[in-house]
Image 1 (cartoon, helix red, strand yellow):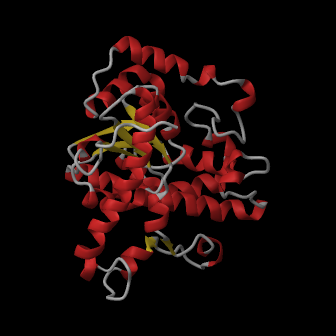
Image 2 (cartoon, one colour):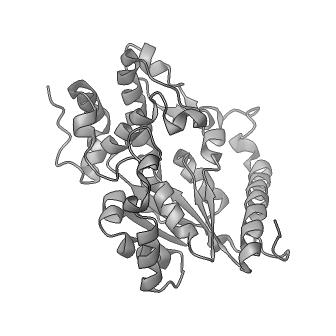
Length: 310
């Protein structure tokens, strides 16, 4: 594949780097695909930086074996105060610039590959990062990058992931596995806790005003009026795109345009309809979700209160 003329680098144009953060199964793939239709955008889909740098502690098995719900954190949080830990706070001035340069070099390579085929000299690089729980680390490395905080009702997120952990699912090639019947409830607990943790971290970063530009968009609003919400995203990225082009992209990438064979249960493109958790998850699973996510759901105005049904 031909490459662009050497010269563009995110090291010099950090403001051209944007992160889609929040939670997977929130419409992030759909949003990234729409943005990737813009000539000036280079889309980087799931580099999984957060899964390498934000290793969970304890591991998911704890949700099936512990007598009480364990508190979720990351290895970095636990170990950062220890001198011999590779990413120790004591030696941050040594490893942080090197880590930043590693990420820049990797993203530059893809950006120049893609932009070179389009004749774009200074692309906007949009990264959909599923490991959003390392948002603080990312913005400490790239303080002038931009944030697209994508939010979806956590109950629909969990419902979507439970569907992904079934026989024949698209996600089996991505590291998922078919759940046994007795494993569903522990998985619901784990996924609910992960959603709550990630959303809290990204929300805190958003409210602190990180980056050179930021916005929050709800999946439900994106679904209701994709043209308007896509326009808001472009404004945040300082991309001047005519409304007619946004309308064409929204139509091309709509759920209705996806073939019947490529959408539905077990598919990456599943339903595009909020509220499926009400019929797909059992009363006990719904109760557990609300117990874990209720406070955050109420804060984000998905529910009016965090009362857990008896």
